[in-house]
Image (spheres, helix red, strand yellow):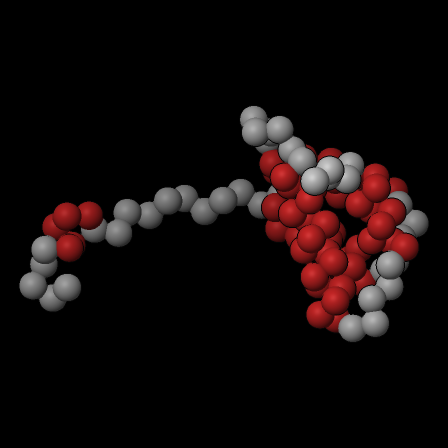
Length: 97
């Protein structure tokens, strides 16, 4: 399977106007996954999302799918929450667990 580059993804989203919200969400999600899987393993995803947002802003597309793709990129731009320890062995062996 050949992944599309970002420009092709944006153009594809801009060219397609799904008739319902669910189809628009599926198209945007597929485009986001295509984009993220095309990134090299050592990529700073937050920076790549920022760069992709700039490319979306330069596009002339106004489709619902493109707007949903943009919100997924905005979410990807946010830092991941800090990991929280959930108790480990002591929690698993407590009498209330």
